[in-house]
Image: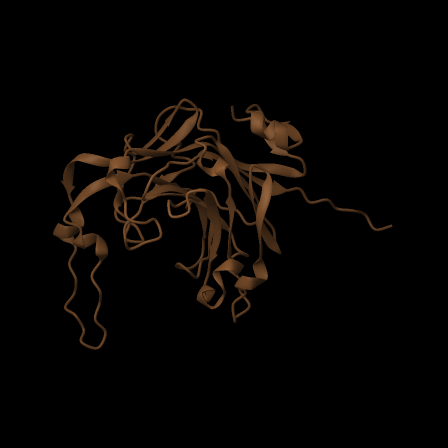
Length: 298
C-alpha cells in the first residue's frame, strides 16, 4: 500500500534494510512507516497534552491508545466524545494573579471549560528531530464532518509563535470540504494578503476517503506544496523577511501531526458531536535532504 503511489510518481532508490523509497536526488533523514503496533515510537515522537491552542474543543491526551495508536501499518489520531465527562484540572488548579488595573491579565480559556467532553491526539518531533530545507512526504487519509481539523505542520526551533514561523503543509476544515490548504504564519503576516501566504488544492479527490500524498519541498528560496505529486502552491521565502534581516523559514523546524476539533472561536468551525469518532490516519512520514552536487572547475 505504501509504495504503490510512489512507484507511479517517482524514480526510486532503496537504502538500508528498511528499503524505504527515496526520490532521486535526495537522501533520507527521517522516516516513520508506523509498522510497529502500539503507541508511536518514543524515540521519534512526543505528545502534546491538555488545552493547547486556538480555543479548540478537544483535550489532547498523552499516550492514550483511544486517541493515538499505531495499528495495521498506520498511525491513527482519533477525536472522540467521552462517554462521561472528565473533570477539568485547570478549572480546579489554575489561579490568576490579581488584575493590574493598567495591565489586566486575561483568563486562560482552558480554565473556563467546565469539563473535558472531547479528546484527541497530537504528536510532534520537538527536541527529537528537526530539519532545515528538504522534502517532506506524508501519506494520509482525512476525517470528514463538521468541526474536523487535521493538520500536518512544522514550527521553528527558535522563538515563540509567530516569531518561530509556522509551515502548514496540510490543513483541512469543513468550511471548504473539497480543499486542502497550505499556509505560512510569521511576524507581520497580517500586512500581507492571505492569497500571498496561502494556497490550496481543490477537487473531489479531497473527499474521496482514500489515502493521498502531501508534499512540501523547501529550499533557501521557496517552498512548493503538492497533492499526489502535483504542485499547487509556491511560496517565496523572502516574503517573510524581517526588518532585522532574519527569516523564520531559514532555520530548523520540527514536525507536528494532530487532529483538532473546532469551535465557533476558530477556523475549524463549530463541532457537530454526532460525527464522532473521527480518525486522521497516517500511512507514513518521510523527510529527505537534497543531495548536493559539487562540480570541479575546469
